[in-house]
Image 1 (cartoon, helix red, strand yellow):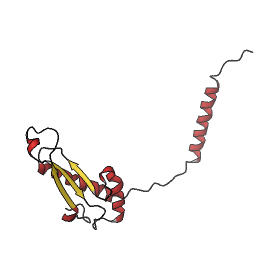
Image 2 (image 1 turned 45 degrees about the vertical axis):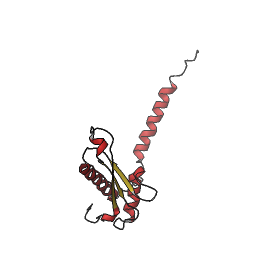
Image 3 (image 1 turned 180 degrees about the vertical axis):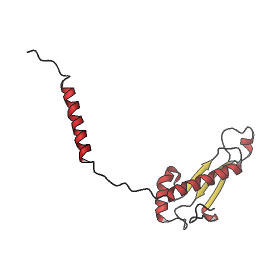
Image 4 (image 1 turned 30 degrees about the horizontal axis):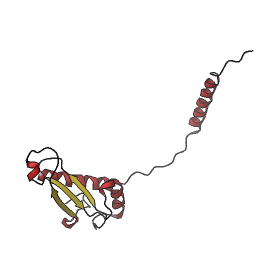
Length: 138
């Protein structure tokens, strides 16, 4: 399965199992196993760089198992073939998202003028609030 120009997944890395889906489908639901559970052995994959694996683990969240596999469960449609396609698309989308290196944040210092304006605004608000106090009898 081709993900990007650099990443192609081998057949042994993907395992599909089929179960009966819940939801709409009439009597078909009781007979046909249309739900797909796609399992991708991400931790053992030689095709993924280490940095991509780290980002993938963070992105996958609960889909990441203790063994280092990603499990995607799809039961959106009544068709097994369409559910398989959706599961593979979701896996590919997740891996593509993990290949993007996030832009590093550079800490910036506020300008002298912006600090002055902020402090002046705070001073002004403080004066307004001070005037809201009780009026003294003189």
